[in-house]
Image (cartoon, rainbow, N blue to C red; front, side, top):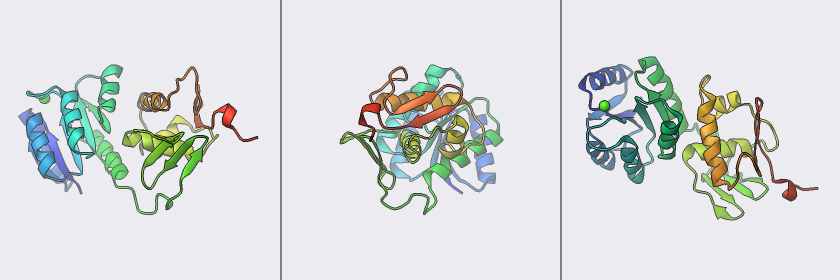
Length: 234
Ligand code: CA
């Protein structure tokens, strides 16, 4: 059961969403414009926002950025466009996940469950005050802080989760399927989602796929995090 804000200007889609979410025992509020959505999240605490990107008043990714400026509530965006650049833009603007319209209620439920599970980690999931160290990286899962060579990294929630998961098993090649299951908590999905996040994480670590330091992608196998060669212990 979650408090959900539905931001959708299409009356038909909106009613269907409200009916479905209410049937699933969620508490729902709904608005039809981005500005109303901003007003709502400024005054009410939600567990999740479902944001249609085709709103009459503001461009979708602009709305998302403004939303992110006032709250870190999980946001699932619903977009009619399914191209990589658009998805990268949305994830970079702070979306937790996305749905391509038209989507089924089953698909929505699955995405919602995954996002909500992530937002409310089960107590005991994270060992108390264990700082993970890999080379110059220091990751504190409890405080959700990461540093590289003493400089604080500005990571999104998902980037942090990805980094922390890999740092928990340094030098071990993790399959994309496992990342999807453990970090995204989805049993199926596309590699593109992972690749997009890996590329942003890589950029924040100051490296590239062609010249990796910490993050190594093994084509067709998976990903591993390990200290850069020069810094490795003998
Ligand atoms: Ca719309």
